[in-house]
Image (cartoon, rainbow, N blue to C red; front, side, top):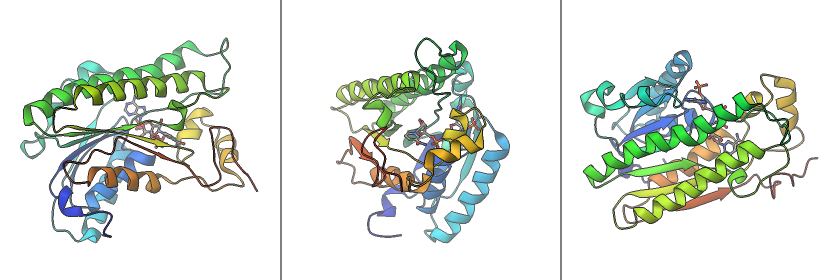
Length: 269
Ligand SMILES: NC(=O)c1ccc[n+]([C@@H]2O[C@H](COP(=O)([O-])OP(=O)(O)OC[C@H]3O[C@@H](n4cnc5c(N)ncnc54)[C@H](OP(=O)(O)O)[C@@H]3O)[C@@H](O)[C@H]2O)c1
């Protein structure tokens, strides 16, 4: 791997990635495996996690580090807090010490204006993007404090910096994540535990398909005439942040496609 990924710093580290069954989470898991880390991949769809396991094992071979490369699949809905509580009981011995948590599971539904928002979808967005994320983070912060080491990497968004019309609930969840993350960093400043927030602009994944409730054509239109980020672009950011020297904390990264300047200012050919 290139010099921007001094992979020896990731060798045999155990990295837990939520939302690892597709998109940014899957690309991140695969890149960590390639760099010589072990990965705990989590999401709700077991069949997708198995595909990611295979891709990660292949990438690990190609990476040629000869380090790490172990994979544990954790099928879990982050909204189910009692299920999340069982994590350390389920982990095999090799994985009982976690070094990095990537809080990536997240989703958006709809472009509905305030007044028209579906309450059930609103609950799912908050339960997943905010409350589930906070519950898992609380568990891992305790674990990291016991180990006197750890790194929490949060998937924020441009939507956590600036609201946009038709995104009220999603923007509120990502603003909540941002507030939580900044406060947590201020609580952990006297420990070796690192806190990073990754804030991408538009990334072409299944994100928009979920937003448009399965309408693939509507999702495709979002990216037409324009080059969005890829899941792999964001994965590079995440793995880069995790592979800095121990005394460096990348507090945040805000990375946009070159033709995007805000949630709504996007140049299309
Ligand atoms: N795409 C973008 O433009 C963009 C921009 C900025 C930030 N982000 C953020 O990046 C993160 C990843 O999004 P993505 O673009 O990669 O979208 P994606 O391709 O739709 O992936 C979302 C992932 O989250 C998982 N997930 C959703 N609900 C879950 C739940 N309740 N419990 C456990 N896992 C759950 C999904 O897996 P299962 O369905 O198998 O559970 C999937 O693996 C999200 O936090 C998103 O807000 C995305």
